[in-house]
Image 1 (cartoon, rainbow, N blue to C red):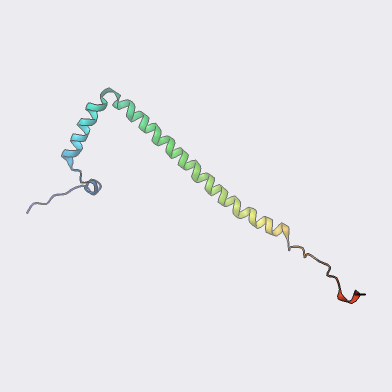
Image 2 (spheres, one colour; image 1 turned 180 degrees about the vertical axis):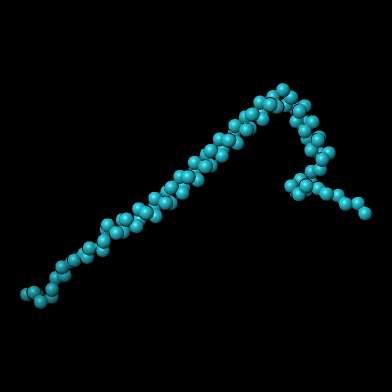
Length: 95
């Protein structure tokens, strides 16, 4: 009985080792000398994306934390809502 083990991540796309080698060779032929440059730019892009993601996450958590504290303070400072009074004309003053 022959057992074949395939990495789970590669099995999803149906790629085996021969296919990956072929893709690598085609990448080298197509990009050639620009391959290190492309890798460097891809690395910079990933770093910038992570920075942006961290900044966004920090801003959201900061807004949530400030929002909770601000709403509590406003409710405490505002106190009960003032009652509005309207004068209703009485019907006893009719001529």
